[in-house]
Length: 226
Ligand SMILES: [Zn+2]
Image 1 (cartoon, helix red, strand yellow):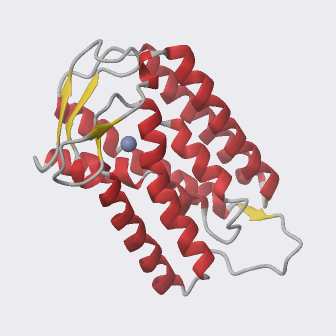
Image 2 (image 1 turned 60 degrees about the vertical axis):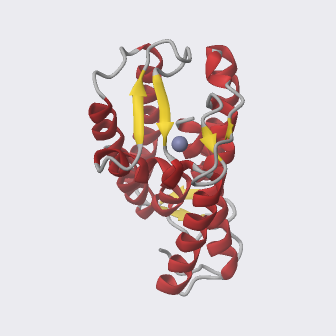
């Protein structure tokens, strides 16, 4: 799953107006942001196997530290605790961010082949394989993304022109990247996969940029923004 994770990040703004969109993206995509570094370090492995699913040629051979359920629960706990301590945030915000980190596993289970581990060392693998069907993948992921964007737009208002344009640009860019996933040719090497995935950090930065130019629409007294 790709834009579905961003959809969840967008939508979470509705429930945590004081948390920046960049932080929400960081939580929802934590597993995929960590993964390329672990690939480059040789700790996790991916193979390119065109046709393994119709949606992606990637065979996720070994990725227990970024993508097992137990690891995501641990990363989620660390994420929530660090955020709580660093920003003296409300417990509800820390819990929401931890849940977003773990949500990545749940969404990935829907789309991946049975390749997602439960634990770091265990042999069992999970995945419902929605990636075997392009219409099925689009039918799940696009509405999830659009619903999240809708919630974000409804929960925030632009402070200036940038708040409108940077958001529209981000949404269109994500949709464009998603369609190149669909129609592009498979990457040449697993190292190329890792470097392309590293560029997702730019989307996190883009989220912070958009959010600085928008403000929460809320009847409650303004919270300090992070
Ligand atoms: Zn993932």
